[in-house]
Length: 260
Image (cartoon, one colour):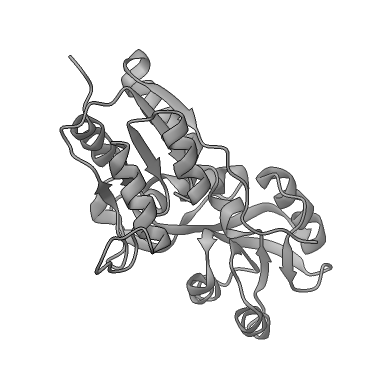
């Protein structure tokens, strides 16, 4: 029996319930029909123009992304708008698009990144206390280290060449908080938990200064760099559950910004 979009969605929903997505988020099936037959899936962090072109070229039937292709309200869909054009191109090529964003963060991505960084403990912002589900993680290191030493560890584990650091490199670090993606809103939770360091992305000048004034160091490792592991999670889940029923490919992506 052919695999259809609805069957894939039902499986993903059972593993990563949309109820855990933030109210402002836009997750789920954003383009296409649940009845559409799926033989080939592409996985990506973002549905950029390049990723959409790859999906069309590869003749995929479904594109699963972390960040939603449609985020804000759209009042018209035309090829004069860059989002509208992507939507039209995807529909014209019969490609369904499904997004798993903040619900993935809460259910699986936070756990994956915190494991990479050897951070075990409680959720930083708890949304389901019974199951310890939430955004970010905070915990004590096995032994205190200097911030400069831990920076090199983070770069190695996240496979990045450079990070932005707020704080003195000789600061002693024993309690670490992390929240992948854009983490400015998580500073308050890290301070509440008396963390010495927050690892995250997208921290601006003023957020960094405010954190330092409250004795919180920050490693900004980048939004894309801290969330790129979502693709591995998607691949593992789909491969394990559907095995040889579908072909799964990963989009060729890289960070949209560079340090020069």
